[in-house]
Amino acid sequence: MSAPDSPIKVAFVGYGYTHRTFHLPAILLCPEFIVHAFVQRKEFPIDKRTGLPGPSCVDDYPNAKRYASMEAMLKDDEVELVVVVVAGESHAELCIQALEAGKNVIVEKPFCMSSAEADKVLAAAEKSGKLLSVFQSRRYDSCFRTVNKIVKSGVLGTITSAQIRYDLNNAAWARTSTDPGYTPGQGIMFGIGSHSIDQALELFGLPSHITGFYRALRGIESKTDDTFMIVMRYDHTHPELQVIVGTELVSVLPRQLRYFVRGREGSYVKFGEDPQEEQRSNGMKLGDERLGVEEEDRWGLLSTKTKVNENQVLEKELWGGDVWTGKVESETGSGADYYRDLAKALRGKGPLVVDPKQSRDGLRIMELARESYDTDRTLEFD
Image (tube, rainbow, N blue to C red; front, side, top):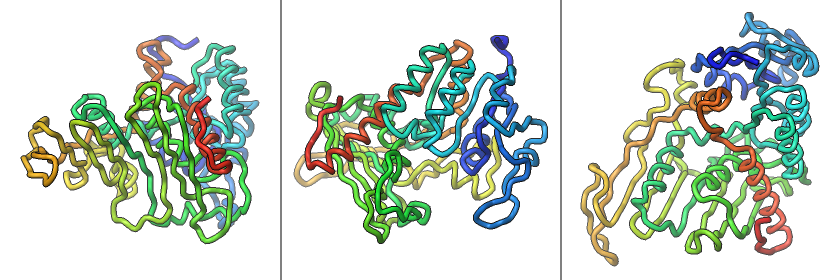
């Protein structure tokens, strides 16, 4: 067992775009971790799409070990944490394999391809006594941190409706599937929808009833969705509340609607997403104090019956009286904070922020949403 304050040695399964864009930039900002090893079958792989040399962990991380197989890496007693970032179809198998080998595990979303698979992984984690979490990093985005703070502050009063969206302007990467059928775990709902549903669970808890809709708008007939909407009721906990989670593939806007929350005392609306990915693509370096900071023109708009923020000004509303409205400064986003919180949990200094049981419930919501649409029924969450 590692010393309480020693760096946590991490092994990554795979070495692709998601590793290089999301996980590694975050973990490199955290001195609590050491990039110890990678599982990459070939030392110098060839990109199948281009025929050119692909990314190599050996080139990029010469001080880290490279293992050609999962089995070989799991024999490394120095590895304390395994980060599984591969095709979703392999998540359950690899997570269980790592847990049974006595490793703590982080797995990329979606957690698994089904809630039944997730239950097996959860059972393996409980049996092993090791930590398991899902990389729901969008909880650490500036926009979600801001809406979460506003909702939980109570300034909106009793929440009556909320929209949590991740819409797209016909993004090319979302139009790649040509399969007319459907394999569980595929589609936009199980992709970026995993983040939106996770945020709904974090804000409002489990729903009582689910009504789902899904479509394919990428120019083919298909059961694999690229557009979806899930309507959730909370009859037992928030009887006035209705939450809509969704993604539209066809949404011609310069900045997409992310959140629209209405309460009896106020409303909050936010367009545009966390700036970190755009900032990094524009050359901003890791550690730059501006990373994750939104420009003022992207801040969300808070409107309330009474003044609760210094930026609000009084405006007349035709039917309901005076409204105080103004932009609210966005919280700073930080993907690295996921790993900082994880380090605290591993060392017994803080809670496990992203509970895998919640991610399992998110999978079940998506399964019920598809069943709801296929059977034209509203279903109870089970």
